[in-house]
Length: 402
Image 1 (spheres, one colour):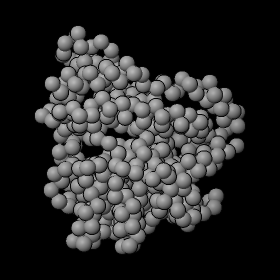
Image 2 (cartoon, rainbow, N blue to C red):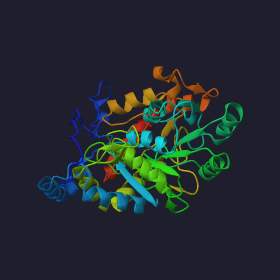
Image 3 (tube, one colour):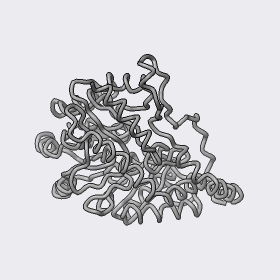
C-alpha cells in the first residue's frame, strides 16, 4: 500500500475543454463552423479504456500517493527529457518553488525572470523569499532578453536566473544564456511548462539544464487528469534535496532535515500520464502540423504575422502566436469569438503591471513585452485538429484583420 501520508484534499473541479464563448455580436453568415480553443476529449477518448483499467488496478492496490507507477513515470520522464534525473510533484508551480530551493535560492536573493510569462514564475520567486527582477523580452522570439540580463547583472548584481521557455519553443540565445550563468556562478532554473517535447539542435531541450521544470496541467502538450508537475536535475544532490522538500522535508519517516512542502503525485495521475506519453509522437506531430499550417497559410500576408521558433529549435506545437498590424489583441479576440472561434491572448498583460508585483525590481522600460501583450492573439491548436477547423479559424482571423 503506497500511502505516504494523509489524503490530499480534493480541489474544486474545473472544465478544461475551453469551448468557444457565446457570441455577442457578428454576422451569422461568418459562423460556418464553431471551433473550440482546445478540445481535450480528442486525446482522452483514445486512452480512456486503458486508463480505466490502470485506475482499477491503482484502486485495488491503493496507489494513492507514490507507488510503482510514479517511479516508472519518473524514469520515463528522465529518458524523454534527456535529463539525468526526474522527480514528480503535485503541480508545475510547486515544481518551480521546490527547484529554486534545491538550487539554494532564498531570502535576500535577486532572481531575474522575463516580464512576459505566466504568473506562477513570479509567485515561485516570491514564495521562497527572493526578489524578482523583471527583464524585457527579445522581440524576435518572445524569450528573455540576454543583453538585458547581462546589463542587469552588471548594474545591480543577480543571484539566480529563472528562464521561461515560452510558446512551445525557446530562446535563440539559450546556449549563450546557459554559458553566461555558468561563467558568473548564477543558478539557472529553466521553466519548461510550455516546452515538453521541444528540441534544441535535435536534442531534448531540458537535457543540458542544471535544473528544469514541467507542468502537467491538462491543457499542456502532455497534460494530466489533474494538476501535476515534475523537475529535472543534473546533480543528484539537488534531486535528493528536492525529493525531501516534496515530502515535508523528511530525512526519515518521522525525522526532518528541512521545512518542506506536501507536493507528491499519486498512481492515478501517473497512470494517466503514462498512457498519454504512449501517444507523444502523435501528439507532437499533430500539434506541430497545426502551428506550421497557420504559418504557411499566412506567409506573405501584408498584415498578419505568425511567430515562429528560432533556427535550431524544433517546437512542440503548444501555441499559435499571431499579431495583426493595425489591430489590437482585444479587437481580434472579440471578432473571433463572435465568429464562433475559440481563442486566447497569451499573455494580455506583462507581469510588472500586476499589483502584487509592486515589490519587484523592474529593470528597463519593458517596451517589447508591452507591445506583444497589446497585440497578441492565439488561434486554436490542439491534438487531432482537423483541416476544416484550421481553415475556419484562419478564415475568421483573415476577416477580423481586414
